[in-house]
Image (cartoon, rainbow, N blue to C red; front, side, top):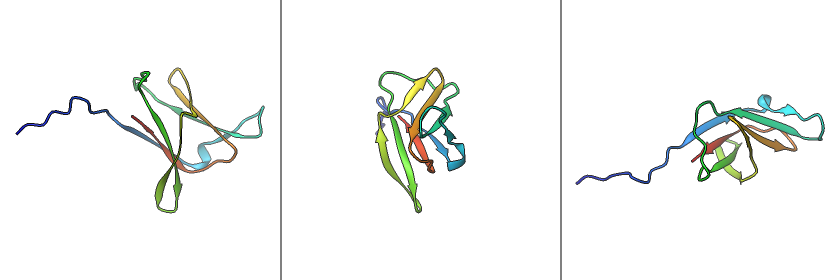
Length: 87
């Protein structure tokens, strides 16, 4: 029996730490900028943000990102360690 994965999506993970956040000059917040390199971003692409709590990742948000060219940006009131999953 052969199973075809016709609708399978490729998932990419980007992990980041607290040191990768930079202080925003105009706002009282922090900005995380991730370079997506040559990953194709489509209208159907989903970005999931997870925060590291203890030894596991907990879902934080979806849809709060800004994509500018090949850069993905998040804004937060405080820096944290986590990962971004791109589906």
